Amino acid sequence: MLFLFIGYYDAEKMNQSSQQELDAVMERCNPPLEQFFKQTRVLYEWRPGEETKQARLLDGQIERRNGADTSKAEQIGSLIIFEADDLEQAVDLALLHPTTQLAEAEQYGWRMEVRPLIEVIKVP
Image (cartoon, rainbow, N blue to C red; front, side, top):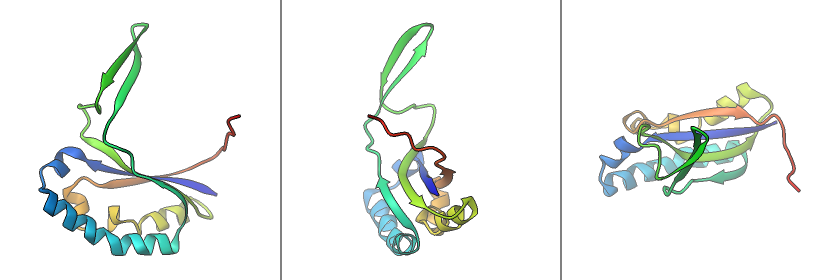
């Protein structure tokens, strides 16, 4: 089965750290990431860019905005599609990711969720 891993972070908390501190944390991510990729059949991985545009229908009109939703500090940091036998195995594999392996994860508001991809729709 295919699963979607979504890793989140708290942008406000991350922005409070210096680039040097963030680089050091990202360096500590390497061993758990190596283990994650060694044990998990990852098909795709994306790291979304920070530039964001929004649109929504409001009172029958399309409202457009530049930037992320500032009412939410939580942002998507990682999207991964991987294979597992079932949801329990998918969660066990996802727990190898640095999101749940580093002590700093709590400090920076890192969290993850795993969702089964139940239907693949081919677009012509």
